Length: 405
Image (cartoon, rainbow, N blue to C red; front, side):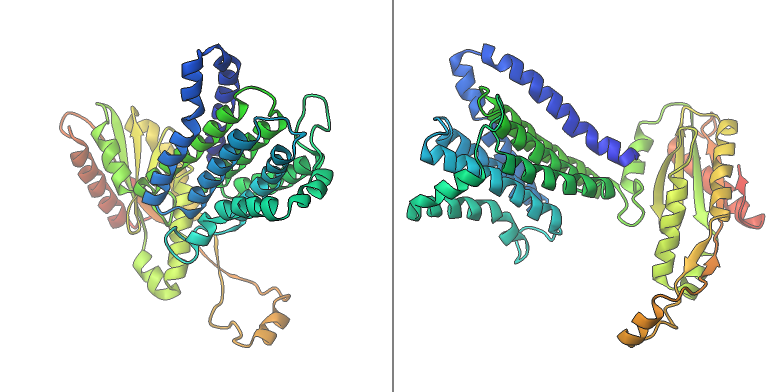
């Protein structure tokens, strides 16, 4: 749940901040109000530059959808919704925006400037252009649309029942995907949906579209920055912080810390015997167990089958039980091997055998750990790491699967 809570924090904070800002925006003078109305466009342009830089088609498309929605609100919905054009624009946005978010939630991220990313990025502009053409060439079309999406169903609530149901359905899917994939863009897309829903449902409130769409754009920008940090500092395979993050951390350590070096025993032999796919599964399992380390330890993938854990402001004696718990957890974890050699090549035969449960072959691995603490003779982090490496070698000499210092 920790990754989900961290991902949820920014949208909730922005939502509260936007609501508080809405309470005080009316106190600004006219000149500042006019300047504030341009803020969503500034944030969208900033986000588009970053999305292009990091090759993110879904974020690019979401920002274009926000810009298009905000432009439509400012251009056509400042008049009464009893008029044909404002009502058609409002109804179109209430349908097209959640459908666009639905497409972005389902579509995989394949980059921006290619035959997969460009059509995805152009979903919102094409939809808005299509709506404009429909209104221009089929002027009577807005009547049935207004019937199905009649506005102001409740006092003080503008969005139609149909639009509300559509938003709720896409929100449910997005929330489910955000729980399953807390590191991806889904939570930011859900917040985009929520922000535009609030802007449409309470459209009669002054500056609500400006505040909410600014918050949604800022959320997408922050998500881009967060994901770029993950790309730079997290290991793709294990999800742990990588070598670059470790080097950054070493520069800021104080005068009291402990460093542990951890290595998977006989990993090369295991890899040669069972294959690289199984080897990757082993590294993921080991990383997951190391990631559970307690006592204030920060886990890193050092490289290959080697990992590191830093305990800032800790003594050696306090860290040993936590490292022993990690070692024991890995030792007793059983990995089920899939028998790829005996898998039938014929699809029909494979489907017949699919329901039959074969007993999987279980294997386990162990790790060796070396630990060192900073003291007067080991004054810099690089020396502490070398001492931890020597202790790790001692663990190997003692027969592996143990902790040495």
